[in-house]
Image 1 (cartoon, rainbow, N blue to C red):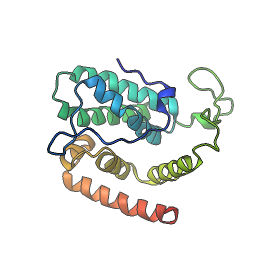
Image 2 (cartoon, one colour):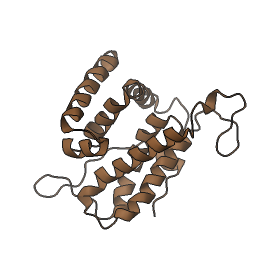
Image 3 (tube, rainbow, N blue to C red):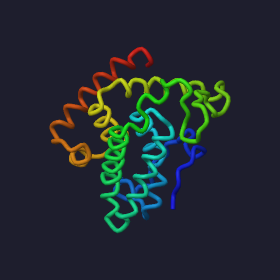
Image 4 (cartoon, rainbow, N blue to C red):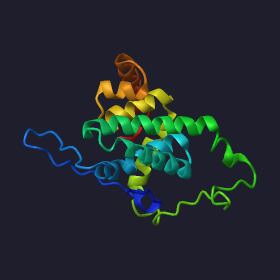
Length: 196
């Protein structure tokens, strides 16, 4: 079984998927392979919404555990199912207030009982500076989007789900997905114009 650990969530290299002769990506052979391929992207998606690393890890891990019930479903259904489960889990966490304003309370602690620490435990900041700066700007721009626009952009552009699957995950019409995506692209283009 695949378990998320902070060590696994370092920089992600994007490599082309192996393709079948007609040029379409080959689907994952097993659910474990699918989950291994999606874990870092799912974590970043959850972290942008929940804004807490531990909560994001919990949400992704819960979604992965729930996906085990769908092991026998066709591989083509795993993507939309996973994103629906993760989105619902994040919504549940927000409703229950597991992380709400925790960092504003003096003397607040994380789940391990240790004081909250904002120090990045990753490698020396001088390494990968450009990548971190780019990710920080993109992440900030995505966070600034309204929730529905951020979801539409992430699912359609970053996860490459089609309009129908995105609509099913978001619980809205295909027209709404297109509207949210168009508005998200316009907003991101304006926010990131000077970064280009």
